[in-house]
Amino acid sequence: MLGPKPARAEALCNQSLLEAGERPLDRSLAEPGDVKTQFATREGTYRLMTLSEYSRPNRVGYQAQGQSQPQVRVSLVSLPDQGERICFNHGREIYVYVYKGIKKAADLSKPLDKKVYKGTNPTCHDFNSVSATTESVSLLIGFSTGQIQLIDPIKKELNKLFNEERLIDKSRVTCLRWVPGSRCLFLAAHASGQLYVYNEELPCGSTTPHYQPFKSGEGFTVSTCKTKSTRNPLFRWLLGNGAAINEIAFSPNGTQLAIASQDGLLRVFHYDSMELLGTARSYFGGLLCVAWSGDGRLLAAGGEDDLVTVWSLEQRRVVARAQGHRSWVSSVAFDVYLEMEACYRLGSVGHDTQLCLWEIPEDALAPPRPRAKRRSDPLQLVGTPSCPRLDECPVLEPLVCKKIAHERLTALEDDHSWKQDNYSNILTEVNKELME
Image (cartoon, rainbow, N blue to C red):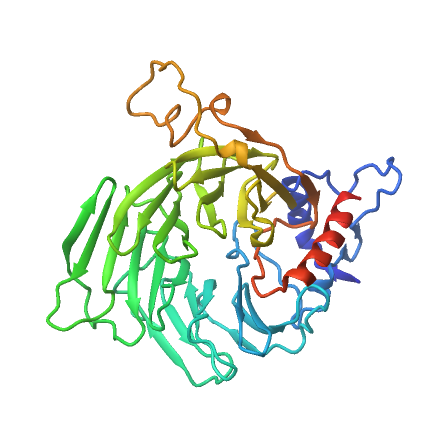
């Protein structure tokens, strides 16, 4: 599992090790069991490769210093009586595989579908679970240059492009979501801080769209296109001062929409009425990810403050902060099988290469006792229900926190199709491994 790399990449390897919290290649091996994962020789650098890298169809590419690839994203969909399909992006490539769960690794040399793009990188994607059948599934793909593609990786006949000429938005597509219960409506979030509603059955205009106000509220504006005939986009949402939207998520019942932005705000809307229900804020930096609990009561958001923020829809306030990561939190997910009246379980991964599991007890969700008001700047949110101080809300410690990779972690998905009895056995084995 060793593979040579050009000598010119050695400096970059040392830099990546330093960024991951490790010493350079000449680090001491005084601790028992400490094994080098890479070493330098006259002909170049050798690195111990993971299974996913070693079995990848193409050779591992190298990035020039100063360049960065889009984060790897993962999408899952369940097909009737046909198991699941999994999609992920890597560099300029998109892969779709048959997914058979954690018990059997996918054969990475035999993708169900693979696409390689030139001049742009895939940045996000999403399956349509409503229209998925054994013979067809719709997959949206967003790109770094702003375009959106709709394909069918099974039939391979469907191929539509939206914002092809970049007249709607020129910035990177950061997140795509199908509207729950719809076969044709989807949302596209961009790094420009704008969110668009598309209908895949309608065309995009041949000229730059002009908008007229439709609805506005505190920190957001919704507009529609000024056209004689209906065309895409149906709506444009502009949030705040134009900070990038990093992730959006619909509640399990499809009525609420949560939006995590680079301005550090988590905004929760009633989707149909476009009413702002509440906000939460990070201590500093942007919020990178957001996820709903299975019952729709709680939201979890992670970001650049290294914390996971838990927000209650019922109480419209932050009810807990989870502290344990040592770098940015890149993805969060609730464990839908362990949501009981007394406890919630939450998982998170981050740039510190660690997987953390948290339990949120029911007593942490109780309304806080009234406290004396502190003098503060009315323009600051710290100390308010949207951003309480650490001494004003429960601070959760991780139940488990374990390094599971040598590279930063960017995706965490909950497989909703697992059976309850099988899941219990899998969970027991995973917990035993993490506790070691």
